[in-house]
Image (cartoon, rainbow, N blue to C red; front, top):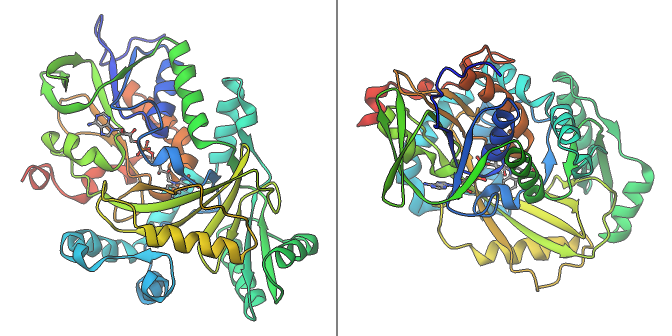
Length: 425
Ligand SMILES: Cc1cc2nc3c(=O)[nH]c(=O)nc-3n(C[C@H](O)[C@H](O)[C@H](O)COP(=O)(O)OP(=O)(O)OC[C@H]3O[C@@H](n4cnc5c(N)ncnc54)[C@H](O)[C@@H]3O)c2cc1C
């Protein structure tokens, strides 16, 4: 092992947050022989978004969401009109700066796409290689995923989506007549059209995936500590990690605290305009899948993924405060929709809500704080944290080690949101 530029005897690289991003990074650093201390207030991948996501390895989502078309048409997707996007009125003032940056980013989508695409496109292959290395290949299924449309405009919508995918170099195929027949048989007759995206994939349990990566890190010598990190402070060329009233010096620290990362980064002058983009899931134990791959019911933005012993249906982009109680009406509506698609969705499962950590330009934040302090961050993975966990971990392991990352990480530097001085105010 090479000497680490930040390590001194007896000190760790502290990773704050054991969601899938922190767990993947703990593995990536530990496998290189680094001394890693992974810290979370809860057991790995139980407290944040990494517990409850859709399990989709979304290699087709190469473009960041903000674009001029979204600015013109988002209102049609509002929950008010039966859609999946909720921008509650009481949040408008608090969200205004984030929304202004979203609008700005919409006109930079073309410029931002190559950066995101470079991370996303190889993600399934990167995850497959990582799982092979840690001897858990069964966690990933590479059957691609399907998008289905219903109603009189179904074929036209599918054709439009196929054209959009082709323009980005994403492969699609027509969904088989058998699948469309099965979908009609379950969820009422009428027109249906579908596309298969063969290069994506899904994991059979998102939590297990993060736990497997954390487990591999522990086997390689990492330590896990369950504690709330109250603050990170510069300690000369080290970082002070204040947890449970004690300050523990770390050779370096990486903030991977999901939507709660902003507070930990602020003392270092790093701006992290993260918002909670909340999503919901419902589970259907014992229900057979339409096919062994995620199915996106595209008209309603609901994705149903086969997971170990159950189906998981996820939906909604709710711009509510992180930690606010779940909106039971959304869970009831998701359940009702699933019934119309022919899924037996018992009322036994109460539903789950979690916060996607989202930056206004929908690029992740990967980098190092300016100045001397060895403070790094891997945040803002929005809808793609499961997909990007391993690729981001490889980038971060290189940055922490002081070697060139496997791709150009400059577009992910959080200083794109302002200067250090702006962030301190
Ligand atoms: C409904 C839904 C569906 C999704 N579907 C997909 C999908 O199909 N594919 C995909 O790629 N992505 C998907 N995502 C996105 C993905 O789940 C997230 O991007 C990803 O989980 C973010 O991981 P993270 O590790 O950054 O954050 P989190 O998983 O939120 O983890 C952050 C961790 O930091 C800890 N923490 C925070 N602050 C502190 C502190 N001060 N001290 C100690 N610990 C702290 C928290 O306890 C938590 O465990 C989905 C998200 C949702 C909500």
